[in-house]
Image 1 (cartoon, rainbow, N blue to C red):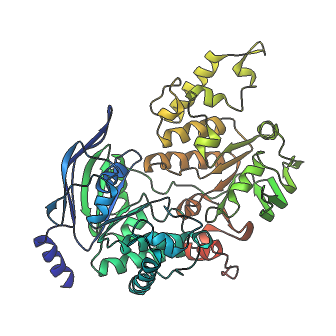
Image 2 (image 1 turned 120 degrees about the vertical axis):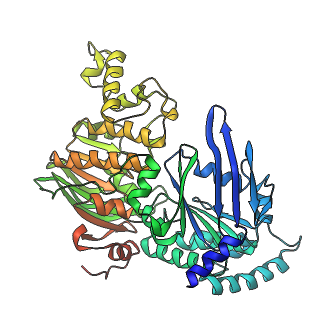
Image 3 (image 1 turned 180 degrees about the vertical axis):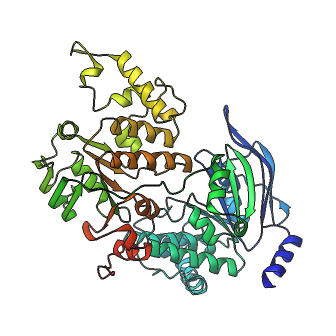
Length: 521
């Protein structure tokens, strides 16, 4: 009854936001094409779509970062011009970005009033903000110490500060861009409670996310974008993840790639007491010990920044460490000299780095040049052992692009001209087709749309089924649970524990990720 009355009220009231016929082009690229959408007051409205679907452009228009070529924005039923972010804030719109806009060496209080001071004297502004923050924190479960330095706060608490900033500026409409990307499951659950509290208090929330589970859990309505157009808007209760994935991609998508049980063989990688200290003297790995066998995927779960990157860097030969690392019984050099990456490849280790654009490719170089990187000494790529055989590399790249469904399949195109998903496919093709004994793969689907995720997961499972060892690092627990045969959880440079996917759940893994070592085995 209450739900029906709420629906009837929404039907008669003006929506919080209405976009009519929004179009935006960047040169020849049409980012948004004639988009219309209604976001009802007091609801959580999800927006999903593949990479390049136009979600971020649309929200940037709403927040005043871009100006639409055509179309109209209505706030509470009134046509509203939003030429910049200040106009958006005056219209009651706040935005919480995926990468927070906080000054690390300022306090919470100082960050909240930054740009919203009441005058030249800061003392009255700080006093007012302290009082208002206390009220907001109590009302919305946004507890944060106002005197804490931002750099001392967890990622989840920093996100709360961003929400407090928006509420302090009287935002009635909140846009959140991929808000759970760097949160533990417990932090994500707390965020959802905050969003539900905001909704109950009459706030309107737009949630941009690629995680269909979150869409199903938290939203009232979901809009789907594909190739710059709005393809559907449905009530969340009337849909399911499979239908949403098909609307996003335009075909049926396997959300969980089927894989049979692992058949582990001999030990391929053995790590004993591995330690890494950074340039500032901070110990990032604190005695890591692990084993990975042929024919299995070992997933490393953890919130970003807890040593996973350093683990991949040492194993990939691009950072120094101490301890012992053996591949097929052979000791590897951990001194981090300039040839260690090449030595790793010679020892049948392939590496798909976490940051594809800085460590995996040179963006101004072509696809075929990127395919040759690290393997330019391959006799198949050389003429008479002296010169590079560009024709051979071009032909090899064309074959890899076809087998890995890279679009467009043009070897001479610059890497920066491909979407993130296709850049990742180029790197995976380069590394996987070397038939390595060990594949190191970091964040394999970061920033990748759902269709490419399905493809990449299939290739990783196929490598395992071919008897190879895979070390998978991902901050996406869904990905870890779906792909891994065993899961090791990292926190603060240590292994907190190992679990089998079928004998654990996200709650237990989340506790381990937060450093709670007493999580049930």
